[in-house]
Image (cartoon, rainbow, N blue to C red; front, side, top):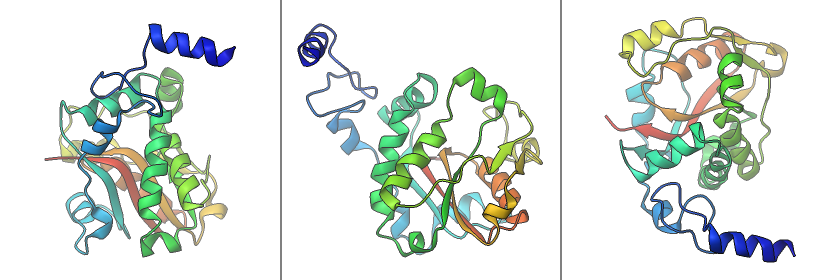
Length: 231
């Protein structure tokens, strides 16, 4: 009976791709195969001279490895997908992309040394407004594929910072000084961590969080994001 009802609902209100608004076919969820296959991958895990680290973190903090799955362009289908994930109550998209990226990263030597995954936390006020942290879902998906635990509630955002959207690079860095506090230093001490977020823009948020983790005793921090914004 449930299958019959689900079939009728799909017939009357067919699920659509959050990227292109096209009708999804059986087996597809949230994103159609055409969109999924068209998203531009960075292949940063294959590059010896990793532009992710050089362009975004050099001089701000020490990142062991930097990985981003996609190159993000404005007004693209990928941008639509990530907007739905972040603002339209579709965080499971992040989990799906985490599992996909985890399968890719599992083939890299860098992942063999990772002890745990940490998601960039939201300030409680923003979490209450949104109802979820999309980076938590991305971390969960990575954890499944990498078979690596997620360390939850080990770091918190203690300062509610204004939106970074309209700020330049220098203002973003200043805006995030002292924004994070490690709450479980004993858990993180000596650990090699994979710090994850949804979108890498200037790297200010990830750099600030990395500095807090290293100051609390983490041995090493690498980063992974779903996408990096193209300049």
